[in-house]
Amino acid sequence: MQAQLNAKCKATPNSPHLALLASLMAPLVPRALVRTTGSGNFGESTDDCAFYTLEALPPVLAELSTPPEAAVRHDIDLGGGLAFTIENLLTAQEADALAACAEAIYEFNGHSRFAPGIVTPPGMRQNMAAHWFPSQPAAQGFFAPLYARFQHLLPRQLGGRPLFPALNQKIACFKYGEGDQFRPHHDGAFPGQAASDDGEGVDEWVGVQSGLSMLVYLNDDSDGLQGGETRLFRADGQGHVDVAPKKGMALFFRHGSGPDSILHASLPVVSNVPKYLARMNAVYGTMQGRRRLF
Image (cartoon, rainbow, N blue to C red; front, side, top):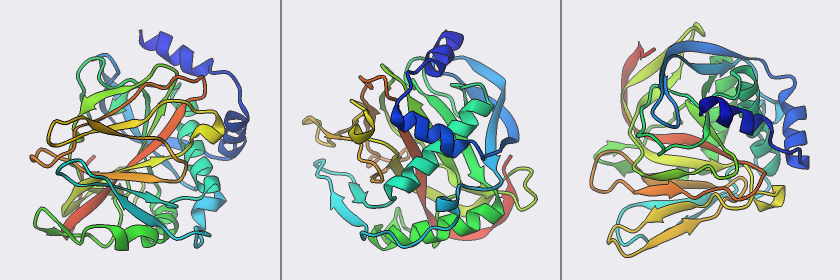
């Protein structure tokens, strides 16, 4: 089953958007940052999974400038719980470059559908995964200017913790081919993380914990994508709200094991153009130091 899914993704028909990503990924050189265990789409497990790194980012990401339009927040009424979108978080060119980073990793790892360090029930997660960290030199030029675009739109406290003045540096990119979906689930919480200074592992930010999922849409119907909406289930059990992918927009919602965590799903992609998504995390707390996590 895994081999068939990988072959399906490799055989995705060409499109102008995919051709653009191929040109953008050509100079990128990923490598495995650290090997670990992982799980596949249908309950498979492996000891040969990895978090990846890129030593250098595409120029448009390495030198983020002020976007032409200011970021705008729109709250979503779910009858309880916290969810909102922020538009203009990335420009179209930046979104393409981030998708190209993921494509470079997929090409490097053989289009693997294994995800490192997580376990999901069989059939729940149906997508290709690339969990990666920019190197520390690359991270310094990317995360701070990105965070400056929208930090002022985030809650100042969450769960009794203050908003941390830096953005978590783990980027989990997902590629959904035709028919792929993510069935209803709650996102887990993770400690703040970054690539280690020596470039050989992943460090934990002690005392800092994720509080909000941040789903950044990297393409939309202008690229030929159809389907792939994110479905947010109302807290009162009275239906749901569907959020359509919009390139450069991010969807934020509360996650973790608490009662205010938002149940959500990714609806199936119905086009032969895949959906590209980057999950990041807004983190809260006070850093008490760093220690090696992986």
